[in-house]
Structures are given as C-alpha cells and as structure tokens.
Length: 391
Image (cartoon, rainbow, N blue to C red; front, side):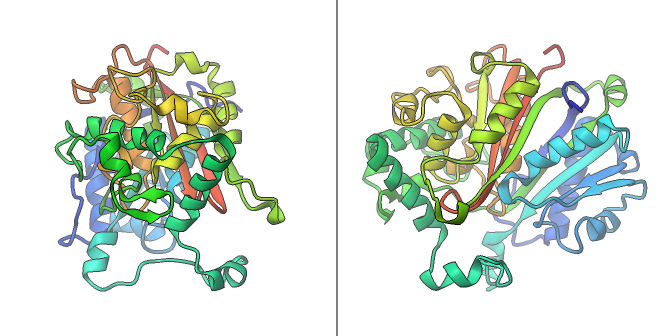
C-alpha cells in the first residue's frame, strides 16, 4: 500500500531550549506536544495516534499517553531506530492513517543530555544485553572514533580531503547565523574548520555536531482532517527505511543504509533528484552528510567531496541547499537524536516559513533523511520526501 498523498504534516514545533536544567524529560515532551498541536490548530482530544522512540520515559508510549492526557489514542508505535526513528514514525503514521487506524497522529522527541551531565547522571551507552556487546565493548569503541574510521576510509578509497568535509560545516554555519536558537551562530571558513583541534583523526572539532537538550514534534493528519485546517501543510510523497550492519565482518565503511532507503522513497514519490529543491540531511558529523548524499544518489559514490565543495550546499549559492536551520552541526541535536529536526526544517521550507535569508524559492518538494545508530557499525536509515499541497 502506497502512502503517497495519504497523509499530511499539519503541525510542527521545535523546543527553543538547548540546555533544559529546569525541566524534566516528560515536561519537554508535553511542551513539544502543546506547541505542535497549536501549530496545527488542533487539541489533545483530537489525537488518536501517538508515536515515540526510546527517548520517551516509561513503557513505550504508555506512560507519556497518560502523562499528556491523551484519552482518545487508539493506535500507538514505539519504534526505536535511534536518530532515524522519527522519519520512520512519519512513514508508519502515514501507513496507519491510510489504513484508517488513526486520523491525527502526534510524534514527539525530547532529550536532556546536557542537563543530565550537569546533574551527574551517566549517559546511556551500550546495552550490555545486546548481542554485539561482549565482542565490541572490550575494544572501547566510541562515537568519535567510529565516525573517524568512516572518514579515513573514504579518504583512502576516493581521495576525499579534510577541506572538502569542512565545506559542509561552512554551509551549516552560513545558515545558523540566521537562527536565533542555534547553539553556534558564528560563520566559519574552511580554514577555521581544518585548523580546529583534531578529536579523532581525521575529524576535527568543527566536524562534529553540537550536543543539546530540547526536542521537537509534529502532527500528522488524514486528508479529510487536512481539509478542515487553515494551516499550510506538507504532504507525504514517499518514504523508505533500511538497516545496515556489519554483515558478519564484510564491512564497508564508505556507505550507509541510505543506499536502500533512498531509492525506495524516490520510487514511491515518483520524483527525481532534480525535483528536490531542498535537503535535510542528518549531520552528526560532516562525513555523515557526505556519505549520505552519495548514497541517496545526488552524486556518484566517491564524488561527494567535490559535490559539497565551494558552497554547493549553501542556500542561494549552491545547487542543493541543506540544513538551513544550521542542522546538528551548528543549531540543535536534541538528545543526540537529530532526525526530528530534519523533518521540521523540511516542513518549514515547504511552507515557505524558513528564515527569509535561507528560504529556498518555490520549494515545492523537499527531502529529509535520518541516520540512527553509528555510521561505522550498525544503523537504521530512513528517507522521507515531502511536497507542498499542490505537489
């Protein structure tokens, strides 16, 4: 069953907090829900579907449904694929709406890693019951060195350079300067990036995303509900999801699960890469963006370095504006899960509500992509293509 034109994103909200020491995790989820529903012109009693991931406290969605007073929920989903969860949720919500299981679906993300650190709470790392734990944990892998291995391998295979990766950060910083809530608003140069301290060779500090509290949410509705709302909406045109893992040791660090999720989304949407006016790409690190763009088909494998260079990702300058809110590299990576923010900015672009300095003219079709897990080991990839109400 296709989800093309079967559901709309009617409301969005990004929590302005980047450090939330004065709020609990449930409070953040609830405030996000209030904001997203208000943006759609709906209320809590209208919600009959709720979607969340592992960042929501409690037993899946159950505790949050009660906490937020969602008394009419008849469909729920707690799919967990890390940072890609929320793009998967959009797909699953669209499927549920198309099947008649719900008509108004609420999706929320919230996190407070900065506040937790200030309070002395240990961050979540490996699940000791995971089947990979006893084989990998003794070697002390961490997020930084897992992504650094991908960058180093890509450089070895294709001649990608640190300067080319730096252009991704430069583009993000050009956009972040217009976002009043962005964690890093200073515009940087390629020289600034490559001269920043090495944190895991070949990645520099400026190749890495920010860590923030906060979160975001969205409201999806059926076509019938959409007709009753005055708010501008973005309709779902296509989506795809896929895992990628270590394949029993047959490891290739130069590609991601977008290799499979992307073609599915494009096929369902019935659009080509030339139709995409704007792209929100998960940017935990600069190498994440480069590999994802290649795997989605915006350029040939190995040509990503050339594709991202010379401002090609800067709105108003390049051919493919990306992450016009500043993305995870400069603005917001709430709870170390940046997938939700990718959807939110794509919707803003479709609505024509991004900052005027970065708004893409006539943005009728946009792509959002999320990566969950680690690029260097196992991940969940999810791709979403949205269009305006006339697409």
